[in-house]
Length: 283
Image 1: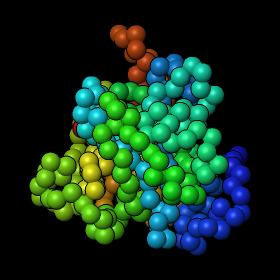
Image 2: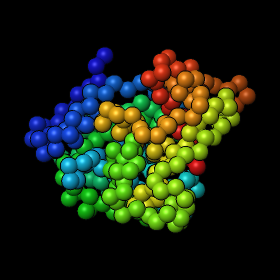
Image 3: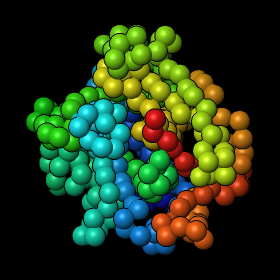
């Protein structure tokens, strides 16, 4: 079944550069791997908003730095989003509601257009996270965003293509090497291979990207790498996966541990070398 083409008015697409329009068209036509979300309790479902917009002919993505007072992932980079509420109709409504609460993005804004979805990702908290991709046609909307006290410390942006070609971020006013927000010697990008006990001891490659604020890493990095790969139809200029990560683990399947009441998630064997793992770890 072909991916749904959400309606975007021609004049909105005509505002984009030819290259950015091609990126949006690829994202609109993308057919993600799916999971039966009805098999999972609402308490284990979440959604995030990948809000794209164009500056100087290139697509950028809206990001936040989580408040340092939060118990979960304090001070880390995140896409606007959160857990599904019982009253949410779908992942789009969850992502937009959370974006409104976290950064004040207007609900039902005529300048925000639904583009599509990516496959679900599994977070370190064992949440099944669905990324929703949207296009903002008026960047002046960003001027009215306000970080929610206690939830968001900072709102910033990053070039989407830099998630597959980190050198493209050199044009940004990046955090200094060795600083609080980039305490590494490498200039733009590094990774650590982590063995995950609750996923059959599989290896997972946790990427980190230098930015103008907090590092883009873990779940957020994995979602944006995938979005950039689809949008720009190109592979990353770095080794995306840890050994065994690509060939052994791909599709999400629910699994109920016999010794635990909580629903766990494991990944089945990959069906092809083109499949991509769905687990992501924040660290």
